[in-house]
Length: 112
Length: 115
Image (cartoon, rainbow over all chains, first blue to last red; front, side, top):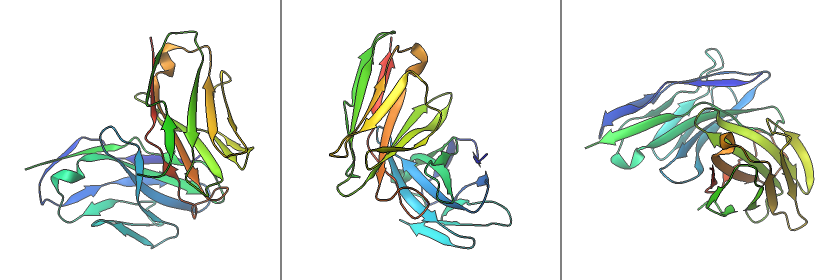
């Protein structure tokens, strides 16, 4: 079956630090990959996606590259802000499938 | 704001009771998905409806059922509630039946507390 593994949190960074949140996956077929973000007390928002190998998804300064050879989709941002504090979820969908399979989420705390 | 609405925002009820959670998808979206978020299980897919028909089923208990109405809103019914059913229940919607090309947009969730 499909699965997503994310690095354990919480991750605590100072403002303007570089962010990496690791995500690896196991999937049948060729999945589409997503990063969702959940701010405190809110629902999930799609942050970025990539639908095929070597694609790079990007949004709001965040980037992730679909690496088929390492089955990874690591999230990066060059300079985090306090407003980036949230829980980040890596997820996948395979083929014409319907359900999103999520990782456990990684909490990010950014301090001044 | 994703355009997906869910009611109620919070629900507190007792064990053994039955509740109904409601979701209205974004305008134009035909698919509705239900997910459960709990501390021990994480985010899990429950069920999907597409244009009124059940399309896919995940880890949904037999005590839970859902439907999608002609106006495309959906309801998730939870019965014989147990303490372990306490969780955040999200609804999501998308334009198509499924697949990576169709992004899922999430509502704000309904927090269910069973006492």
